[in-house]
Length: 509
Image (cartoon, rainbow, N blue to C red; front, side, top):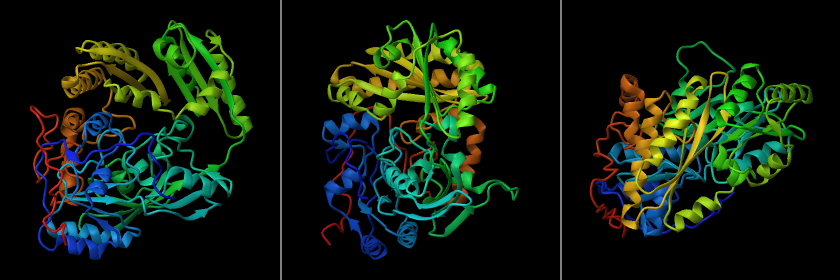
């Protein structure tokens, strides 16, 4: 499958970031072309490959700029080609940014210092399916629909359905520690990964995992899950599957307050029930998308799988929601048909609105406080228009809160307003017991919060980086890690002056 067409076209080839772009030294381009048959220095291709769906970068794109532009794009089709490209970058000390579907919303695939953009979206295909064990082996550049179509024809499913399902790849799911909309039943991607193949910073290929469980030291697979290309390049993944389920069971309820709905979700999970979907919307989001009047909070419930387990789960849900108003199944049916539609957010961006989402996880005991404090902090930012919330992924000890915010600043204050709303919301989360991210990852946008969020544990991450990538070439400028190429220089204190076009003196060759 070729790369899916994004819902809106992003254009522009100027660089917005003011970072120092690393030029290709003599001989590097020729070496890259030898390493990878599909290597491009075309400016339009480089600019397109250098952006993802970070909402602020969409504003830059509409103004004719990419965040930054790589010097060259390499598109390998085998692990050997990936390893060869990585070895060239290691030898020439070139920044290397892995990317694939580029559906991320935090700037994780932005080549902050130029260099090489490693486009893994051609590294595609299901290698094999162990139907007895329920494990699929798949190449990292495989898009979600292709994976599900291939194994679905044999009665299997991974069950990982993020909102970006059509645009995201398996390697991206793993690299950014993603969550699907059915995660309360099947888990996040880290719960599905059995093993990985990774190319390290010097071009060495290693494999991790492979067993259902182990006690052979630390879990090396999980070292790379969520590492966003900073510790190695994921080229192959082994994932757990389950049998394709039958028709789902559905229900919906209305609560008088968001906290009442949260308590019902907590009781459901702590009784051992794990419905695939348990989505609770606050009043404004219920009014906007679930036909509410703004005073009630709507809970959508969907489960699938073995009918005996589903029946028991839905009975527990009904018992714990007995004090709420039952709304039937129509709302859930509508949600299943429109759950991946982001056109409204894109339309607001085109109109100059600042719009984004902030998703975090926290213990049940802290969710009510975080719900109040984050919305208040965001709404206190000048030009803020809205800060709403829903609960979308639940666990026995806590859940994910997903905030959507909007502002209408003057055009010259779009970026500063965006930064201010993120600073207000994210720091309110951290101050009241939440974590940095539940499933969108870190990227460039959250880079500035990582050390604050991890505290002294960030030293462990720095030590891993130093051991696995001592020259610092892998996706520099991310995860709060120091970079030998300089500081990401974002958020900027003044106007950006980055230059996108002259990335390599060898371009004419």
